[in-house]
Length: 202
Image (tube, rainbow, N blue to C red; front, side):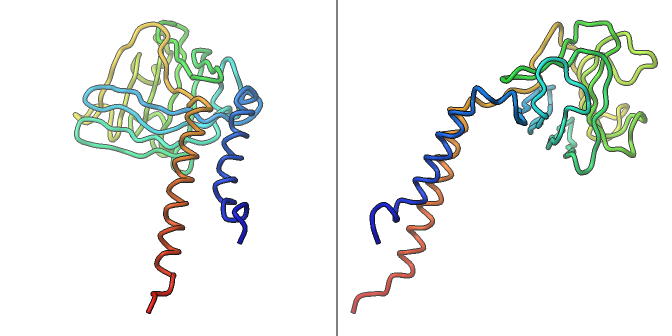
């Protein structure tokens, strides 16, 4: 088998990496996946959010998928687009190709909530980022991480000021490193498989 064919798997990984680099500047025209890592002691929210690529003010309909691990005080909850909904109001959620921010300093009644549908509006199982001035009050001003119920000891809260980052999009170079890492693992696994299948010499 030729060297070119044997390196085919590696070539695919490198090719994919080059595509990611070249598309880095065009990310605004395609879905964008942002990583969430919001600390609310002693817990917070980690995971990812995928939008439709809209830049500027985001509406709930711009969120396509998410996988969010809510960690409170001794309890956790996983919310995905398969078991929860997103809803909101106001113009406080803002996206660039690199990050999503929320303006906690606004008093326009804006909010962004990820919550299990059966719990909508009843204080159960949600992550909320909210400004003041809500009428009626949807959730507390600031950040609410509620893996169970808003009034029990597992819920955690924070009241940041001004505009804060909710999520960040990895740079194209980060995606390249991840792809190369996965490609290296695949190559190592393939080589190990070949070694196991190689007949033993007499």
